[in-house]
Image (cartoon, rainbow, N blue to C red; front, side):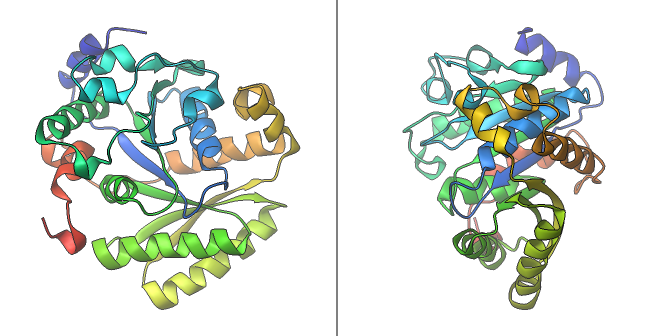
Length: 290
């Protein structure tokens, strides 16, 4: 892996751009969120986008397992001052880089001032050094999930055609809309039979969300159920690499192309006020309250 400090310094001397931050979320576990994050990162990298995948499930991260990586250090070592960010970032397949989870550390709301400052500095450096920062969030509506979601540029909500998944996805968006004013979400319908089922699932969720939450939902795309996915997980190889011609692999690439065409939701000026790390710090309480 190239020297992280040299890379960051070089990019700062350019126009000071910041990475686009995608938060991959779900109301419940078991809907394929982490597989989506991993394969989306690979699809971006294949399109020459500098991509880093942050395993932001601070308690039960599994991105390293899906990629067949064995991290020796993780975010907790950075927060403790034992390692730098450069020393924990893993080189993954196809040129992606991975920031491994810090399993078992306190949620971000409970970090002390020194730890928060260290984390924000590290994330600011990340954002200036990549085109895309993908956050694989924990399932549910824990404090870390809400904070990362509020600070991201786009929130992708992964939902399957199961009552619990639909209900929990709605609850997730309801909390962010009611307590923090978020109005725009993108939905990925996952593990469905085909595009038609995906469209119907999205339409049902969108109709209820529009009526009761007054939010805007975009159907980002559909990933079909694929028999090859389980085999890829067992061998700790991403589907996009293990079975590149499978139906789901093709759908991941289509989804990536769609996301790459989205306009940026914010003006990128290179100032700290626009950085994801700064928004993490500033957006503390409900409805914009500090």
